[in-house]
Image 1 (tube, helix red, strand yellow):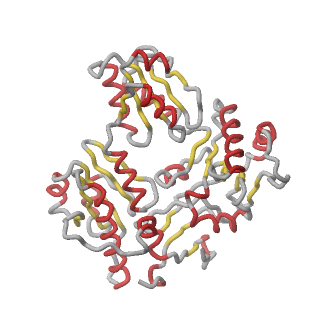
Image 2 (cartoon, rainbow, N blue to C red):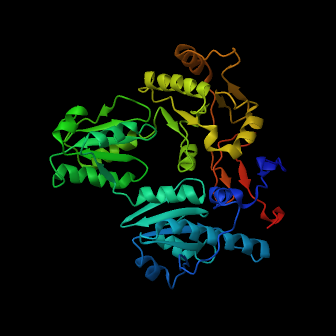
Image 3 (cartoon, rainbow, N blue to C red):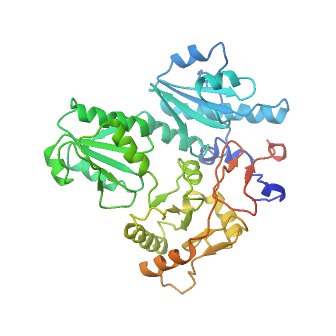
Length: 411
């Protein structure tokens, strides 16, 4: 990580194309650039062809990119991005999925007709829905997200094995409802609500009285689970209309504790609670990290009714390339758990003192610290990394721009 400029807190990172569209896929394939295999996987969309091209596919992934310059370097970079886009579709030979490319300068009119307003973004068109992808632009992360997109918005729980799978999901918001059958009008309302949030929020349903009894669900009742919470909230007012379900979810879609993951990093960092986030770093696979995470979970559970508390958990193992920058910026050691806040005005980091030997803080100690020190605000602005790579960092200015200077990368 190589900061070059301080004006506007602009920092140039010369990591090459490793951190563009094909970040993780390159790492898996020994940095080999994928070769064109003869299949028409990617289309350049324009005013003349976009309607006919998009009609060919059940799912259309549109990459609305910045204008490609005339320099050889810019052209080369874009060619590589096209190849990596094609690489994404190699995992979907049996699915009717296409990728379209839109240039923000030459195809602005098409973008407007499609309702696309943010360049360097990926939009997924499926049936009557348009889903904006808010994760890192890495091929394998996008593939995983697309697999979620093409799944049904509601997953049915029929037996004990599937019920166990439901309980094993703890990192996402999830809902589960009990209905008479798939023909039930109340189930249809639930299904329509699920389509509004798919695939970001997990919706489950059961038609089995036995499964419903295990979940303590009454007929036409829906339970709402926050991430990492064992006990659900029963949505009041059953049976529900689609509108009532949507309103409840929108009023409760900022959990007390949530995990930043590659597929949702932009969404989470853009969603500030009154300009503030509390950041908890902990490696789940490390004994100390696991122990600390359990303490953080208990703090969150004790304060789940507090609308002013929202903690973002980051597992450094999920973002190895960012660890050196976080350590330098916040002056912390991420080989051990950390929790802290950052003030946007002067970028002073405040971190809980974890230097007491091997002893972890108690739940009460951590809660007391949060009460004392979380008046400091973290302002989350639109951090961009080249083609929209979001980084939870702070500086002395209100804007922080990360990008790749491709001219300085050897191709």
